[in-house]
Length: 153
Image (cartoon, rainbow, N blue to C red; front, side):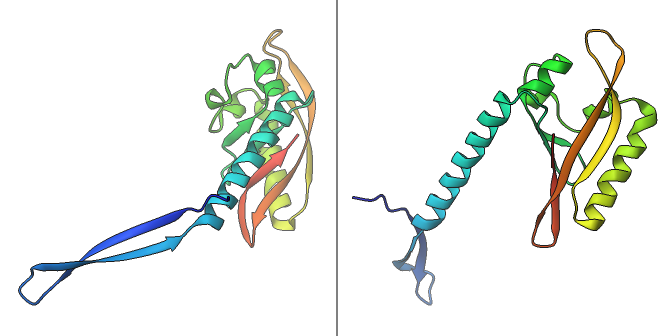
């Protein structure tokens, strides 16, 4: 037997004097929406598990390039315990100041062209305090014509 999910809405039915004479019940079958939502949650969980096991950096941002996800490899490099502590644009404090404008330009160009991007920049090593060169590859993510953010390595 399959699970079925329903939403019930209740509204009083009033007469001319305002007395409740009954209740209107509307029942909506939400089974498909619940199944799709659960499937998406499971897909995201699997993605994060795979990304956390990856030996390369994997990250996602929102439209303002605020970090929404950073895998274990990135967090370990910066000595950060959980990706919730690596949110917003905190990444900028680890990137060489002369490279930040180049990164933003590559994201703007990739968005305008709906194309992947590649950008080399210097990132500070948390252990040595020295900058090391990295090549970031990524792609803007769109839903229909709306930018949702970036996904990259």
